[in-house]
Image (cartoon, rainbow, N blue to C red):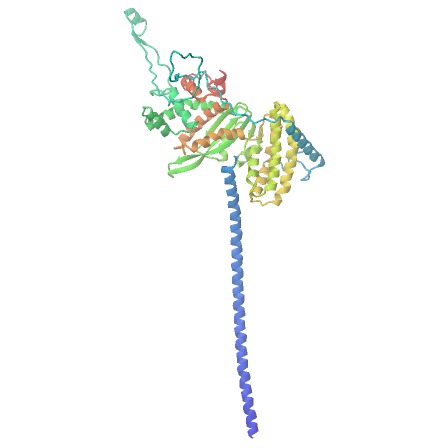
Length: 545
């Protein structure tokens, strides 16, 4: 009995322990299950966080690359020593090349032959030695003020045997003077003379630029030249006049300026007609800050520039500061001939216009590859080398004094094979670069307008780039850094008038001061006599006359 009781007690104890162990095992299993769910949830949270951080890192890397490219571009800019899908292999046909991207054996042979001839000419060219600076003699027509300095201790025992002459160029501030026009009056002595004509006779006043104004032509010319050629704002010129004893109100100066522009406006419109009558022009546009009275701040407006290459005439156009395509369409309405521009899309409308040949600018394409040097040095250097060969052909033609026909033949023989191979290289190289990178944008820009870029070979008078137009715009860029902005749209239109006429003086190598002084005196007569042609007063015709 006692043994059975002990066995039962032991059994109960074991069962109790088993139950406790089972419960504990259940608790552990439940805890492990909860922990696994927590671990899995945490793992998903971490994966989402990592994914989000990776996206942020990718965006930041892209932004850093973009900013690095911009920084490299600005450093080079400010610190540096500053359609058809393929053009045809036959420059006389200008058909689509269906041979694809591969350089054909005959094309490769032509390129090698062109490289060989360019290299031979480069070695054959006479090397220009570095010129030593030479002090030029001072002009003989300048007024001389004699100054004699005798040495000390000279008496009758000394004989003069010669002299040492040193000429020093000096300067005096500008001088204002008064032109006093006196017209004597005469009265008739006898009644018979009074009956024959007026009782009093006086000479007619010579034509003055601005009626009811005491500003002469030379003063008006000086004001315009100082502001638009030497970039001196009117308020600075007023201070300069005050230093020599003449006080002029700003409102008076502005009135003279407005009157001068109104006087020259007819000549400005005649200049536009002459420019548009030519058959080869270059077009570009540049910004000019203009005050917006509604917004009470300056806004970015645009001046359009048209240059007649053969006549060396420059025309600036302002249309409420707009850069829209409708402005250039209205500006060039009726033009027939070649138009050379950059890659701005507003000009693409002339690609299909009858009677118009659209040319590109290799300088703009070259600039794109220069900006991509930091991103893709090898590809950029290759592209720049090919463009450099095209410019070597132009140098070769210029140094040999070739006429237009000879230059066109040289371009077909040497430059055209290089362009054919270069365009195919662009198409094959583009898939290897980042489309949004600087190299990708340079390749895309050049490839999209390559048919325009290659057309300059068609005529020897066409230029390889638009640099003449950019040179004509440079005074505008210098001016806006000094006088900062135009007060309104009317002021910007007046600036276009003066920039046009002074630009023509520079292109024709005419002294703008002499030209303005003479034209401001004569133009009132031309404006009142329609039998006279205002084109005679344009700088290139004025110089010849």
